Length: 562
Image 1 (cartoon, rainbow, N blue to C red):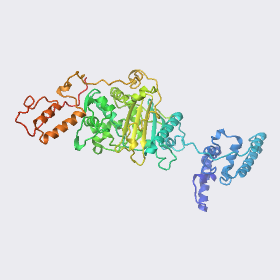
Image 2: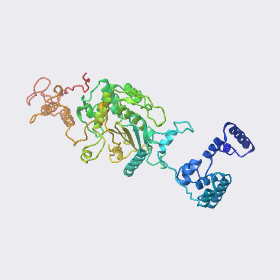
Image 3: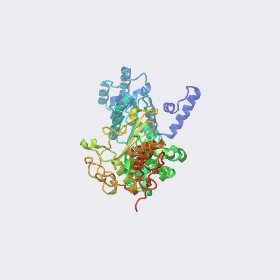
Image 4: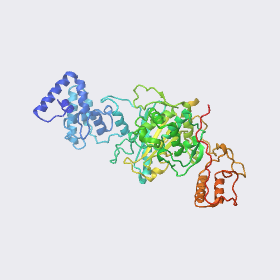
């Protein structure tokens, strides 16, 4: 009857007692005595909010039931009779009397020896209310929602990595909290198997301001984190190559979309790998336009971004800059596929589960080119010169529109790590404007791993970090004492200063600057003369308002050489 009352609480009435009796008869027919006792011990109240012998042992004694002494086990057996009246922290004498009665009953039934029972009765009641462990609380809730009720599961969580990740998030939040950033999340996945080794949903699970929200499963704008996949698809299809020269300059795309860079300026002409490493917006949008929105969305879903909260008609070209919503779980799953050189595996949390079958979603060559581009963004000169022992990794950061989210995802052949910082209420913060907000070098680092051989060493199979040196330009060297020669079909590289100078000169000519300013504008554009031949002189009667001929521009996209 007591188990029936615990399984199905009913009002204290004749009808309720009748229903409990029927349930008790049903349990007697279906279960043996040991099974009934096991269910009762797992459901019985033990004082406070402790239900079940496992929770009670950890609440009152701070350890599991198998580690309890005879005196402590007898005390636990006494509590279900009257949990409130026998609470050992409030009524120790009553609890001790009931414990001693149980020990005497066990001695009379020859369940324990007389000496052991007397020794246990002589010990004092030492029980205090201990807090339950909250390690990986978000992971536990997330995993329980994906298993059958009552089943026992051996998870892939690594306690050491989990403790490291939790401390790293808390340490970073101590620096960011005064600046208005209250929450952070982290996810560590083993690259080869896709097993979740650590999950931190928020900075403090007990916080009343959204501490129970799991930030790894909350959809947010990814910022620039989708750019590597767009470039990878373009590399695979041969639309561009890593050395293809792209142009980062003001441009208006279809529907009036005119993206700007995070810095506010433009970089001019540069190779695709550098455009990806510097996370420039205009080249990324142009690559997406060439690849196509529908193929890009289909490939992103194949990478594991199954919950894209946008369709082709809603996202448009803003897809390249984070115009969709994804979760940290989805992003880490997708970047782990890049770390495996294009092989996708769903994330797993069960050690005893059947292994998933990997599926290829990208060519190894394209994934390798993306890893090489992102590898150069991991750390700057100060880290190299500081003598830090850091693993080589590929790193990508992202900031959402309005500076509401700061992301960082790093991967090596051993681990893939994702980090998010922001506020669950989407409040903006000046601290989220910093590109290193989520990629703090002193807090969260994937552990170093030995570099495997062959192409699988996409990020690690290179010499150790060396002091920084000047990046070799893809353009011809500049001759000394002369103006730079016109490399690419007679067109000088467009730099930001050149663009600004040309704008000013055009504006001056439109308001009546005369032929002298027109000649200066043509020289700034790299045009040696007007449409009819050499540069006009001061005596040329064509003064007044002049229409400038725009410079020829080579299309920024080329085909990968076969």
